Image (tube, rainbow, N blue to C red; front, top):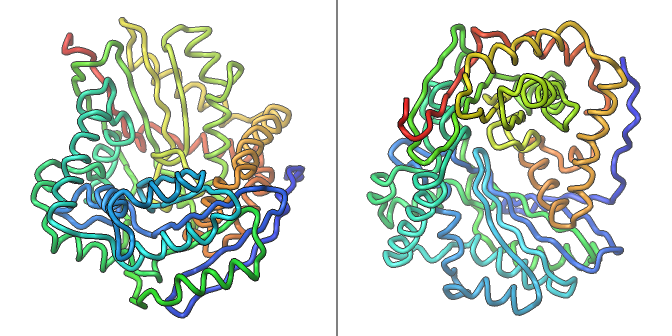
Length: 433
């Protein structure tokens, strides 16, 4: 077994829980003149009920439309006036809201997040406006963009059968237009209790002060029971599934392949070799598929691989996949590319050189560690580690765990990526075929 040589990042972490169930993570760093505040709710696209596609994303927008003591657009004005930045994002398994401010802005960020945790302004006007905004975002990012939704929206319905795993998380216009104020309130009541959230604070603050401020602003948030997540489980593929679609705006053909991988939470040790394998295949000019498909065979113009549909291996829960996607030249052939991918996977299954593996693991770990250098990145990663792994401190172990991945385990992962377990989606450009 390879000896781990990648150190864990060293920063203090304190965790506690309020009486209303809110989990709190504090990571003081007196060397940073800023403070990052993130709130992660354990609700994402996969949690949406049938008939409510797009609700997780819609609700991310609703949370910026004012709350009990904060008017519409005032969150933005308060943070920017204090010299800070803010945003929110919706993912397959979680939704997060985050603020980066000068160190003296800690209380402001806590006040703003606590106020909307008590309840956003769910009104007919706000709902109608945000449905329109989300529909326009879908038009811009998916419907009217070349390769829109490829492959993260296009592959799941090929690979999966159950609604949680297969549906379009961006949402259908029909479901969005049918949304009522009561629907939105029910979604908030079900998925946005304090007990379903993690508050993470990183940066320049005194822990005692931060703890007192958290108590002051969040202790009064109503205690409500966290939702019980339904089972997302479904069987692995036993025969290949393959579909194609015409993209009128695409100029080149493209193909994406996906294979089920172990659960990133309950089977983390078995999942990590796939993270390393994805990088070994496509990270850098010397990687297996870049060298083969682009430089030697010239059957692809670009190729990439990553574990999980949104390329966030440590903030996902199963079922999920390892994806390989390639853009082809105008006369490119998907079968030729897939055959070459199969050959390269067989080569990896036959054995991996320890020196090559060491370089890949060091590169992946360095990327992780660099993201933790950012106060905001650190706050978000600590919060998602608490949500998915039940312990924020797990975030400091990921790089080290990657360093312990063995050549044998990477070979086994490649060997498991057989044709009968593969889901494939092809993009046909411009309706020419």
